[in-house]
Each structure stands twice: as structure tokens, then as C-alpha cells.
Amino acid sequence: PYPVWRRLRDEAPLYYNERYEFYALSRYTDVAPALTDWQTYRSGKGSVLEVIRANIEIPPGVILFEDPPLHDIHRGLLARVFTPKRMSALEPKIREFTVRCLDPLVGAGTFDLIQQLGAQMPMRTIGFLLGIPESDQEAIRDRLDKGMNLEETSSEEMYGDGFLDGSMFAEYIDWRAKHPSDDLMTEMLNTEFEDETGTVRRLSREEILTYVTLLAGAGNETTTRLIGWTGKLLAEHPDQRREIARDRSLLPNAIEEILRFEAPSPIQARSVARDVELYGQTVPEGSIMTLLNASANRDERHFPDPDIFDIHRRIDRHLSFGYGIHFCLGASLARLEGRVALDELLNRWTDWDVDWGNAKLAHTSTARGWERLPVTLG
Ligand code: HEM
Picture 1 (cartoon, rainbow, N blue to C red):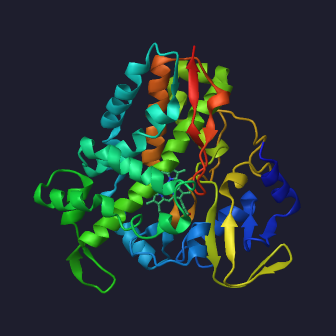
Picture 2: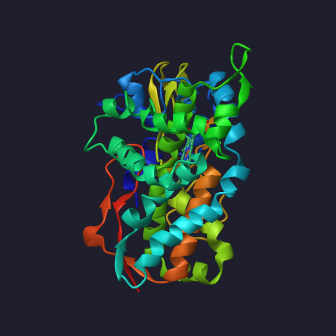
């Protein structure tokens, strides 16, 4: 399992890729502190390799690609409306949607877990959160999926005009401004805050677009991949699957172990703000550093028997949601979605397998996982 990461950890804990000119840290003891050291490892030029390299202008509010103090102001603002309470209130809607996806498949014998559930639930969840009418949600998701696929989109298109500008949500914001409700979009429209110049004001339409697109961009494909890995790993571990089926209190830790074992967002990139000494070498200011959180999750120096999948494992902080100031803002929502997906699968089937001949990994740089995962049902 993942021999390249193992070799990096063992033989080149500070690795330099000459062809693409970036460094990589792969051990837990290096990745975790680097994720928290935002003064040295900066996100302001992007935290995705292609974004840093493309050297593009990033609109204010894309907190994933910001450093303090702006990051903290914008994250604080988003955290005020995107609360744990609001996320957990979504559970009945998420569950109802999942039931609607899965019920017609009972008796089917086989279905594609990604197409029928994994690719639908995250965008629908964000839609529920924002209060987007269900009829508009599929079109938005298709556009996002296309935008994230490297076979259909160059990285300039991906992160340039039309993707992070949030134009796909624009009409909806205007409509919501005239039809307020109890959703996050309405709250964003009404929120008053003190901006970096000390002025108390409301968010502009532009700013709301940025936040909404950020949530959709960060929370869609990653969660789709989590659902895929859930199906795959539990197909391969029937005893653990049946154990969870019998005892649903195991669900939360099972989801944590799935996240540790297969990080949907395996690499975070940073720009190095000062010369850093590591393993007897100097990483010069201005370099690109990649932090391989997926490798850190499999580091035998930190997790005993890391390549063994064990839903009972006591996990001392995996790094799949990052760590430090950029820790995933949607983590509790992602966990909730994973838990509901697995719970509802187990309510219908306790046995499934993967049809490997027809499974396919997604070709994207930022999120790792399955694009097609046909399951055969027992
Ligand atoms: C940040 C992973 C789901 C919103 C992050 C980061 C990771 C991550 C690794 C940190 C990036 C860095 O340090 O540069 C994941 C995974 C998910 C998931 C694996 C699903 C399994 C979600 C969801 C949402 C979301 C559902 C929202 C709807 C965000 C936002 C940030 C973020 C806004 C930026 C936080 C900041 O920069 O302060 N996520 N995420 N994520 N995530 Fe998630």
C-alpha cells in the first residue's frame, strides 16, 4: 500500500522534485507542525500546487488561499453563519435525500455508489445549507464536476474566470435577496460585520458569491470521495462492515478510520516564507512545499500498523482535514454526510462487493478517490 509514500518517509523525508520544482514532507512529525506554522508555510498564493504555479489573482474571501490577518477576518465571518448547529440541523434533510437515492436500488443487484449517491449527496447538502431550490442543484453540480476534471478542463480554466468567480450562483443570490428565508444565504445577506478597515457593513454580492463558491468547491468532491472510500474499504472488510451493521455506535469512529486510511484531499501546498533548515538542507524562501497529509496518516512512526484498517483504532489526530488555522471548516458536515451514507447503506444491505473491472479512479489533482465504484449487492 502506497510504496512511494513509504519510500519518501524512509529514504527522503525532505524530498525535492526537480522536474516540477517543489519540496515534499511526508512524515507525521514534519507535516503536522508545518500545517500549523502558517508564518513559514503560507497559503496566500494558493494551497494547491497548480494554483501557486499558475500565479493567478485570488479574490478576497477564498480563505483556503489566504494568510492572517485577512484569513482570520474572513474565516471568522464565515464561521459565524456556517455554524455546527446549522450543520447538524441538516441531518434529517441529508438522510431523507439519501433514502430517496437508495430506496429505488433495493433489489437492483448492482449500482454505482458514486453516481447514485456519492456524487449527489455533497452538492445537495450544500444546496440545502444555502437554500438553493432542488431543481437548480443538478446543473450546478454538473458544472462543478466538469470544472474539477483534468481531462476536461485545464488548470487555468479550473481556477480562472468562471470557476472561483461563483457566477453559477449569481442569479440565485439575487433571487434570495428578494425572497429571504432561514438559510445561510439569507443570513449572509443580512450579516453586519466590521471589515479590515474598521467599517461596519454588510457583505457585498461579490463577497457572498466568493464564500458560496468556496463552500461548494471545498465541500463537494472531497465528500464524494469519502463516500467512495467508505464503500470500497467496507467491501474489503466484511467482518468490520457487519460489526458496524450490528452496532451503529461504531459509525463515527469508522468514518474517522476511513478518513485516516484514505485521505480524500491528500496533499496541501504552501509557499515557503523564509529559509528553512530541514534534514541538513536549506529550503529557500520562495520555494513550494507540499505537505503530504495522506502519507503522514500512514506513518508507522505515529500510527501503529498504519496499513491495517481498523474501525476500533484509537485515532490520535489524523490529518485528513488539515491542522491549524486552515483546519477544514466543513469537517463536521463531512463527517455527518459520511455517517448518514454508511448508516443508510447498512439499513438496506449488509453485504456488498466492488465490481473491480468497472471501477475507476477520478483524474483530479486535488481530491483522490473513485469516479466510478460499481457495487454488487449480497
Ligand atoms: C479546508 C479536507 C469537506 C469546507 C480543508 C482542508 C482540508 C480539507 C485538508 C485544509 C486545507 C489546507 O490546509 O490548505 C476536506 C475533506 C472533506 C472536506 C477531506 C470531506 C471528506 C468539506 C466540506 C466543506 C468544506 C463539506 C463545506 C461545505 C472547507 C473550507 C476550508 C476547508 C471552507 C478552508 C478553511 C480555511 O482555510 O480556513 N478541507 N474537506 N470542506 N474545507 Fe474541507
